[in-house]
Image 1 (cartoon, rainbow, N blue to C red):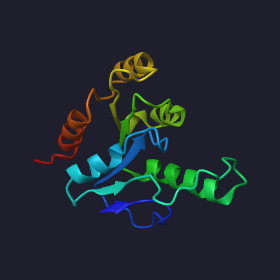
Image 2: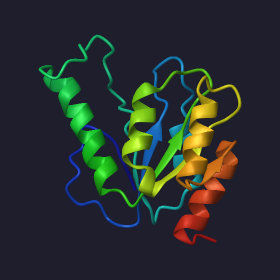
Image 3: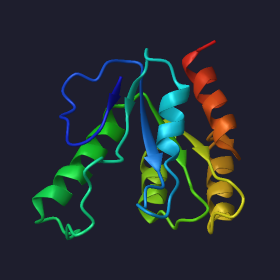
Length: 150
């Protein structure tokens, strides 16, 4: 099952995974769709890539649409069993790096060559023993191993 905002996160069933990482619309590839298609229906997938995102929304806390999105993401990150992070080399993804720091205890990471702060991500993952892959295909295999999927 895939859940996207603005659907309320009321009954998240385990096992669950949050797809954190690069989203910059028009810049980042839709890597979340690749992950969704590769995982079995037995997982609850929380995908923050909102289908009806409006880039004109002001990104300030008093904007109700923006606030709803950010709070949805934070709740999903907190409640998920695993956080899978992808750092698209075509993006900066500062919020994703913030989320990596916050949820490193339950994260798996894919940071391909070319990501502007790959060195920082590499050292962080090494220091805190966070599983890290260089390709989406390898990240998918790491997710399979984490959940014991054959």
